[in-house]
Length: 130
Image 1 (cartoon, rainbow, N blue to C red):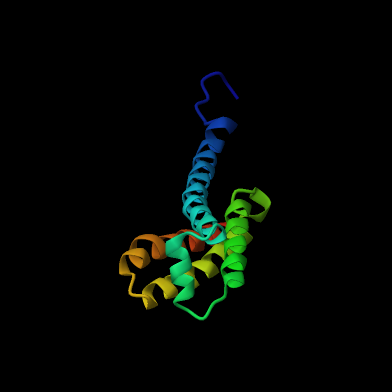
Image 2 (tube, rainbow, N blue to C red):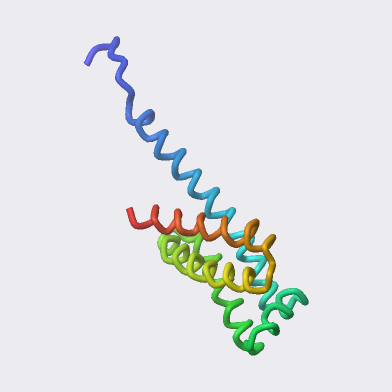
Protein backbone atom coordinates (compact mmCIF):
# COMPACT_ATOMS: atom_id res chain seq x y z
CA UNK A 1 0.00 0.00 0.00
CA UNK A 2 1.45 3.34 -0.99
CA UNK A 3 0.97 6.82 0.45
CA UNK A 4 -1.28 7.64 -2.52
CA UNK A 5 -3.79 4.89 -1.78
CA UNK A 6 -7.23 6.51 -1.45
CA UNK A 7 -9.26 3.55 -0.26
CA UNK A 8 -11.41 4.33 2.77
CA UNK A 9 -10.05 3.15 6.07
CA UNK A 10 -11.87 1.32 8.85
CA UNK A 11 -13.22 4.56 10.36
CA UNK A 12 -14.94 5.46 7.10
CA UNK A 13 -16.47 2.01 6.81
CA UNK A 14 -17.89 2.22 10.35
CA UNK A 15 -19.49 5.66 9.82
CA UNK A 16 -22.70 4.44 8.10
CA UNK A 17 -23.18 1.81 10.81
CA UNK A 18 -22.83 4.45 13.53
CA UNK A 19 -25.37 6.66 11.77
CA UNK A 20 -27.83 3.79 11.56
CA UNK A 21 -27.26 2.96 15.21
CA UNK A 22 -27.87 6.59 16.19
CA UNK A 23 -31.07 6.60 14.14
CA UNK A 24 -32.30 3.48 15.92
CA UNK A 25 -31.60 5.09 19.30
CA UNK A 26 -33.61 8.14 18.25
CA UNK A 27 -36.50 5.88 17.22
CA UNK A 28 -36.27 4.00 20.52
CA UNK A 29 -36.44 7.28 22.41
CA UNK A 30 -39.37 8.49 20.32
CA UNK A 31 -41.18 5.26 21.05
CA UNK A 32 -40.27 4.95 24.74
CA UNK A 33 -41.23 8.50 25.71
CA UNK A 34 -44.94 8.48 24.83
CA UNK A 35 -45.39 4.90 26.02
CA UNK A 36 -43.71 5.73 29.31
CA UNK A 37 -46.06 8.69 29.76
CA UNK A 38 -49.04 6.50 28.89
CA UNK A 39 -47.98 3.80 31.35
CA UNK A 40 -47.42 6.37 34.07
CA UNK A 41 -50.92 7.75 33.52
CA UNK A 42 -52.28 4.22 33.96
CA UNK A 43 -50.29 3.68 37.15
CA UNK A 44 -51.14 7.03 38.73
CA UNK A 45 -54.82 6.94 37.71
CA UNK A 46 -55.07 9.94 35.40
CA UNK A 47 -58.69 10.93 34.82
CA UNK A 48 -58.69 10.25 31.07
CA UNK A 49 -57.02 6.87 31.42
CA UNK A 50 -59.31 5.84 34.26
CA UNK A 51 -62.36 6.83 32.20
CA UNK A 52 -61.13 4.73 29.25
CA UNK A 53 -60.62 1.68 31.45
CA UNK A 54 -63.97 2.17 33.17
CA UNK A 55 -65.77 2.25 29.82
CA UNK A 56 -64.78 -1.39 29.41
CA UNK A 57 -65.41 -4.12 31.97
CA UNK A 58 -61.84 -3.80 33.27
CA UNK A 59 -60.98 -3.52 36.93
CA UNK A 60 -58.54 -1.14 38.53
CA UNK A 61 -56.10 -4.02 38.85
CA UNK A 62 -56.11 -4.58 35.07
CA UNK A 63 -55.27 -0.89 34.56
CA UNK A 64 -52.37 -1.22 36.99
CA UNK A 65 -51.10 -4.43 35.36
CA UNK A 66 -51.29 -2.79 31.94
CA UNK A 67 -49.47 0.27 33.31
CA UNK A 68 -46.67 -1.86 34.73
CA UNK A 69 -46.36 -3.74 31.41
CA UNK A 70 -46.17 -0.50 29.43
CA UNK A 71 -43.67 1.17 31.77
CA UNK A 72 -41.49 -1.94 31.94
CA UNK A 73 -41.52 -2.38 28.15
CA UNK A 74 -40.67 1.30 27.65
CA UNK A 75 -37.69 1.07 29.97
CA UNK A 76 -36.52 -2.25 28.53
CA UNK A 77 -36.67 -0.72 25.04
CA UNK A 78 -33.69 1.43 26.03
CA UNK A 79 -31.63 -1.57 27.16
CA UNK A 80 -29.75 -2.95 24.13
CA UNK A 81 -30.10 -6.64 25.08
CA UNK A 82 -33.86 -6.44 25.54
CA UNK A 83 -34.86 -3.79 23.03
CA UNK A 84 -36.15 -6.21 20.39
CA UNK A 85 -38.36 -8.08 22.89
CA UNK A 86 -39.59 -4.80 24.35
CA UNK A 87 -40.46 -3.56 20.86
CA UNK A 88 -42.51 -6.71 20.29
CA UNK A 89 -44.28 -6.17 23.63
CA UNK A 90 -45.01 -2.53 22.78
CA UNK A 91 -46.25 -3.56 19.34
CA UNK A 92 -48.69 -5.99 20.97
CA UNK A 93 -49.81 -3.43 23.55
CA UNK A 94 -50.12 -0.86 20.76
CA UNK A 95 -52.45 -3.07 18.74
CA UNK A 96 -54.75 -3.36 21.77
CA UNK A 97 -54.48 0.38 22.47
CA UNK A 98 -55.36 1.18 18.86
CA UNK A 99 -58.41 -1.06 19.09
CA UNK A 100 -59.58 0.49 22.35
CA UNK A 101 -59.12 4.07 21.12
CA UNK A 102 -60.91 3.24 17.89
CA UNK A 103 -63.77 1.48 19.71
CA UNK A 104 -64.27 4.55 21.89
CA UNK A 105 -64.46 6.78 18.83
CA UNK A 106 -61.16 8.49 19.58
CA UNK A 107 -59.95 8.80 16.00
CA UNK A 108 -57.41 11.50 16.89
CA UNK A 109 -55.76 9.26 19.50
CA UNK A 110 -55.83 6.35 17.09
CA UNK A 111 -54.37 8.14 14.09
CA UNK A 112 -51.90 10.46 15.79
CA UNK A 113 -50.74 8.37 18.72
CA UNK A 114 -51.38 4.65 18.43
CA UNK A 115 -50.86 3.79 14.77
CA UNK A 116 -47.50 5.59 14.34
CA UNK A 117 -46.18 4.07 17.57
CA UNK A 118 -47.26 0.61 16.49
CA UNK A 119 -45.39 1.01 13.20
CA UNK A 120 -42.26 2.27 14.98
CA UNK A 121 -42.40 -0.69 17.37
CA UNK A 122 -42.81 -3.11 14.47
CA UNK A 123 -39.82 -1.57 12.68
CA UNK A 124 -37.65 -1.76 15.80
CA UNK A 125 -38.69 -5.36 16.46
CA UNK A 126 -37.81 -6.25 12.87
CA UNK A 127 -34.43 -4.51 13.15
CA UNK A 128 -33.70 -6.41 16.35
CA UNK A 129 -34.20 -9.75 14.61
CA UNK A 130 -31.52 -9.08 11.97
